[in-house]
Length: 166
Image (cartoon, rainbow, N blue to C red; front, side):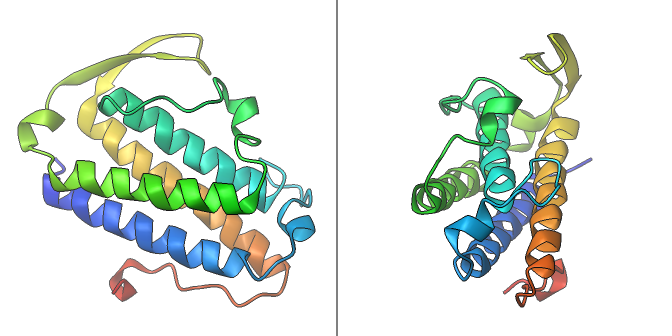
């Protein structure tokens, strides 16, 4: 079973990694960030857009946070056209996630949650703790893809190891 302290640690890790990844991404040209590199969401920019979108959709399910502008996964990659706008929203939303985690009580994580999944086209019910864990796992998965793409561009990438988080 996960605890609020686990969620707080994962939220802090997520914010730290997003800051680190975005700092490296700033060293690339906009053209390079948006270049189709053959990744699942094509580019660094598309993957970062999708990652923010997914965090927004999950937090809208967990809390009263507004759902993202784009309604579906295909639209998630182009939610923010400019890198500056994407970065601004990422920083702001990391604060939302960390604020939610800071106030989370164990009782809020108990039981099942039912939501409508657009990708599955139906309602799904799963344990809330599994879904919270999934949100953070999903972040790590896609940040790993961005890390790989950055490596392909030959830039120095940040450490992603949690024990080295400040």
